[in-house]
Image (cartoon, rainbow, N blue to C red; front, side):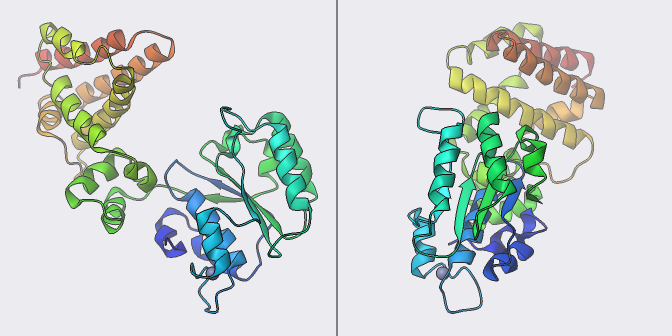
Length: 326
Ligand SMILES: [Zn+2]
């Protein structure tokens, strides 16, 4: 089982949360914000467990008592996870109204009730207004966890009623250690930690296929030494939409690492081809490449095809290679 200890590196408030919840000294609403995969939801769950735990020891949650086990398995009647209804993108006002009505009746098991919104930004404005009324007169012994990586989409009036807890990614080497502790192969842990920029949860989602695509893509983009090489590389990516989406994400990471290497960062482990580019072109070439990727993103957002967007990036690489001896 995960413990508060596991998340100490991700927020300055972990120790405070643990002691507040174990002592039943929590406020009625928390806004937990930070990038995806930094442990926000796990910590909200741990807080609920700590409040509900019936373990004997001083260290809460114990993870072994009935309430702890029920929270872990998602079957505790006083812990509600609020998500969009099946097939919907947003959380409507009805969903919020229903769950608030449910927690307003007497609790089933314990004195504390917890509502966890893992994607609070999905609430419609009407749903947020409905929640706001409840936050203005919160039911007794009920705690709301609003979790989001987009805090700007929440009404300021909601934010002002929450205690804000910020989560952040781990430094890459810390993330790597954490991944190994969680059972990741050491040879993959470093790469995944870097690809996910220290967000351990995101790193855990990276599968073999994505690692292979990264390798292939790095090989491909930096093999474009002349404009004439562009077409054959693009043709390898022209059919598969999912692969294209992943490729554009990965490209951003590759370019970021090239820039870091050019700027003298020591803990960047670039693939040989990327390292060659980083070395043979000056920083201006890295910056041009970075701008090209940003532009390609914008092109795709305005419905330009992946092929054209990708071509424009590859042309920049070939131009840079042509400019500098390699
Ligand atoms: Zn327990």
